[in-house]
Length: 255
Image (tube, one colour):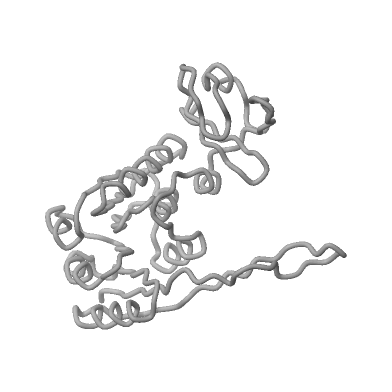
């Protein structure tokens, strides 16, 4: 059994560590997790305080919903596009910088398996603390998990000391240029580098820097997600709410 139990409450997810001690757990109250939850199977309900919660499987969607958050995370729609278009899978050596809350790294870890090697870099200690905690949960819950190493600092200052060659590099930061310059020589032939750029000026800068270091830009796009829901009088229709922008994605290949 994992050291973590995932509890579902309507649209909320609670990640509870099976600690044999009476604790105050945010949103659930005071109780001993191991005493109350260790015998609860997936699909079974448990009463905690005045709330009936259901034990959920510890899969990627549940870990994403229940993750600790500090920095804004890369959404599932963008993570999925990057993973598929970059061809990331088992056995790959992948760099995720900056780590932030590890939203992207959770997706990467799920598809890379035991044979992969994930390197994360984050210059802000307060963000890294949250991201690494989320990855530690995932390592305990996923049936397979890649080798994971973490470096603190700026990409251009630390990546050269790793001695690694990468199958994929994904950069999410305010200024990508120095990181692109540092990472381009460390890409294997046929490897891809991606930039996550919230605005058009960043996208243009990434594009030009990739060209300057000899990478070929093969794809750039903004991915739009349009949620739908059931109408009160029957049928389905687009739901109300903002048509939110996340970022522009750029992928360049070394060939």
